[in-house]
Image 1 (cartoon, rainbow, N blue to C red):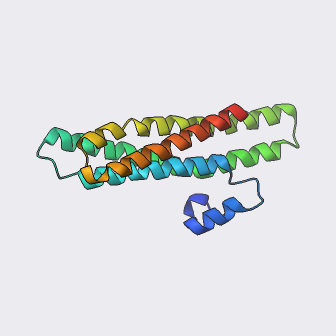
Image 2 (image 1 turned 45 degrees about the vertical axis):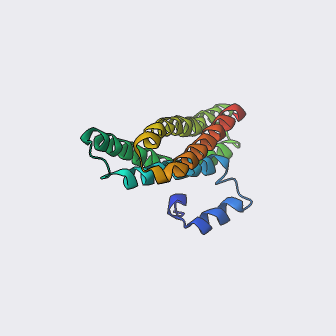
Length: 161
């Protein structure tokens, strides 16, 4: 079995992405971009924890961290799931129309999930701006931009199908 994309080093992933191969492609890259955005939100939450005198703020920061980590982990899984789904589309081109449609429908689910997860992650940002480490607001902004890019990429892939 081939090495999972999520287990590649950054250089290895980028090398594979740049090759003349059907996968990984834009969907995988979108999932990775979203995972990076979620990871930045986690970083800000981690730096912000333990700095407030308010237990309510600390609980909310902990909750944001848990959510951003769950989103990051799922987006990381989708890096590979997108590639797997697209390879099934490629293989189905030699099959019947019904097999082609089934593979296409299955592949469409991945960018839909990427978009939903990115939307959920962006909802965590305002609280981090308000109550998080004030020196990391730029990191929150960059996270939002990465998540927005991944979201838009997912929309492009949905429109394409």
